[in-house]
Image 1 (cartoon, one colour):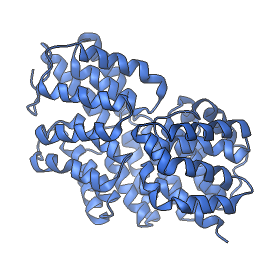
Image 2 (cartoon, helix red, strand yellow):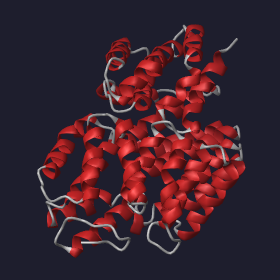
Image 3 (cartoon, rainbow, N blue to C red):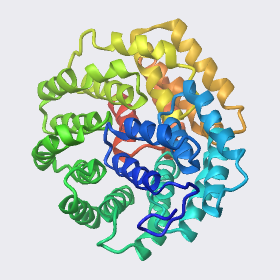
Length: 407
């Protein structure tokens, strides 16, 4: 069966292809309907290869090692089929690398898929994510090039493509072009959180905080509408709003955003929510605000996730609350894990070796009475911090930790 963009799927049901495209639309829009719709698809067509691969991708995107069994099941089910088409075989190869934590090899396969199938939005978006936690903006732009050259403005997902272009441009420092592409994407689809996120980054990087707060507020109703309830990514936009308030010197307003929007999601035990919360609390404390006992909830979450080996970026954030609160046992477990991780022959293991373990030690010292030693350690790897992935705005925390403690 073939979809409206000319991509073939191994299935005997045209309804399955249509439903797959709906799942993809939900995924691109950061909608909470992704998994319910995908579950519906797999109930109707449990052997559809691309649906199974999509499920594996969604689970892998959660950066939670507890999902590895389910991911492996999807992989093995698809791998057992002898009738996969070329594109599906290549997706399977990408997943084989990704589930083995060979992210660099996986993204190379996804990028190759896009070169031959430039309208494969799933491959394009997953590559976008992997570049985000890889080398960043330049690679993100290169990854999008084939799609930008082949997509027509009247075709499905074009608005989402422009939103991705906007973010890649922003991370590459091309702020004027990034803002233009992001606003164009939002004109096409106001529910495109990634496009709104990209424009918000432009405001953050240009210190246009007075524009940033009302811009985010103007879009929140779209993302929280009954027809398109956003998933947890929407809380990251609240985090950005808090950063804008810090930029304006409104520390109490930033803390109010934390209490009103960032605490409840922590119950979902999703990595990005913890990253949002920990980095915001530390920024507020560096700005001179006492955040009280708000670190306690994060420490409890970190105890269960301190040995995660999905993303160095994430694991560094899990270390923050235990370090701040002087939880020696959890801190030791985290540092021991980084030491072990740095010996792994995986993409993130290499990141842990080059920069992650040193940053982890630096965080523990910066959170204690050894701040001078922490600054020196963090400075020693400062030029390599980009390797942990995340955005410029997210990684700025580590530059702030250095500058706030330099005598």
